[in-house]
Structure formats: structure tokens, C-alpha cells
Amino acid sequence: MLSDIPKDLSKMSQEELNKEICRVGMIAELDAVNLYEQLAAMTDNKLIKDVLLDIAKEEKTHMGEFQTLLLMEDEEQVKELEEGREEVEELKG
Image 1 (spheres, helix red, strand yellow):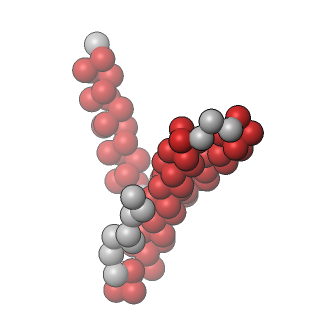
Image 2 (tube, helix red, strand yellow):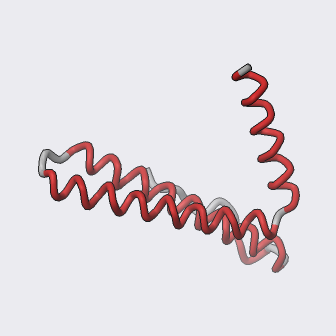
């Protein structure tokens, strides 16, 4: 399933628009990762599978680029990601 752009971007401030652009980019890259990995799982052709998984890996890099940009733009996101990491570490023990 491919995601829709979550908001009417034309009604946002430039600062909020920049954050949303990064989020939409992340969503698109994650959708691509899911698609290529699902397609790879469906084929028995090793070359096709290998190429699809290589492309999926590249999309993960792209997702990281968008995440890095988002974290440069959104201090609240940085804080919340750290809180999430801490919560998982607590549950992990």
C-alpha cells in the first residue's frame, strides 16, 4: 500500500512545509523499501531478487537522508526520538 501525502501542504508556513517535505520523503522511501522487499520475496529469480534487495537498500539510505534533514529542521522530533529510544531501552532491561 502506498501512502498519501498527509496534509494540504499549500496552507503551511515555510518552516512547517520544510519539515513536512522531509516527512513525505521519508514516507515515500519507506513505501519503496516495502514494495521492493515484497517483490523480492515473490520471485524465485536470484538476479531479480538481488537487484530488488539492492534497490531497497538504497531506498533505506535515502530514508536516512530525509531523516537527517528532518532532524536538522525539527528540534521536537529530535527530543521525541530520544525519548522513544529511552523507553525501548527501559523495556529491554
